Image 1 (cartoon, rainbow, N blue to C red):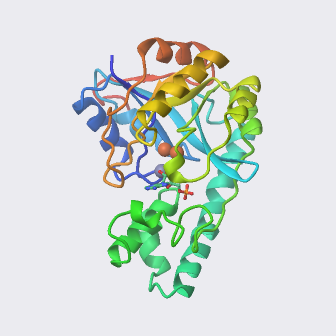
Image 2 (cartoon, protein in one colour):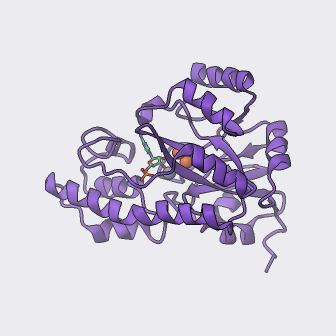
Length: 287
Ligand code: AMP
Ligand code: ZN
Ligand code: FE
Ligand code: FE
């Protein structure tokens, strides 16, 4: 069983449509893929209609959170997408992304970069808009060579010259809301230091105390020793340890299934979830 529990589509800042994503997942030999767009479940319906035979789709989302000034991402799986309290929070975070992206474009223009809002809006399409879309505009303009190169203090990194914060959830509240909606939570790339500041390990322990289910250990932004450290921490704290690609299509170098989750860990996630069911593929014949 090959299980990848973290992937993005055009519903947020990935480059494959939800339908393309599930087809590629099967073509890459995956048995299970989770669709975890930033702060939105908008891609679920399209993905669910297209799940190929032999693949199972796990509906999820990656929630933007902030703890004591440090941004963090919480993967949420198999929650009830209609549950009103969590839905309202997702909408708040997602809707705030638009004025925030406009403000970042304004800052870039003040810095002399001739980026236009229309350009960024075109790149984002109808996806939940974020820094990777703006980064791609900077690539198009020749300001930086790659999307990654825009995530520096000069440009879009946390606290960078053109950075603007967005509304984010308190992770303790997010864990409570996801649980109340029948879902399971996994702290995404908790020690991805190359992206900026990370929370201390004591915070991971407090989140575990508050009901966090797992941590993502195997991830492209963790060095091998960090992965091992996180697996040890998971064992100490009674947390599940997952592995996933965080696939974003052509916007990141990681391919689908590059990191995977142990089937037993996946089984435990499924067992704990009560808000939604995984969607087994029927070859795309579902109405
Ligand atoms: P936002 O949600 O708009 O704040 O943007 C965060 C997104 O930027 C996440 O999806 C990350 O995948 C992406 N990101 C963060 N750091 C980097 C980086 N160094 N290189 C490429 N993408 C990044
Ligand atoms: Zn992303
Ligand atoms: Fe993330
Ligand atoms: Fe992600």
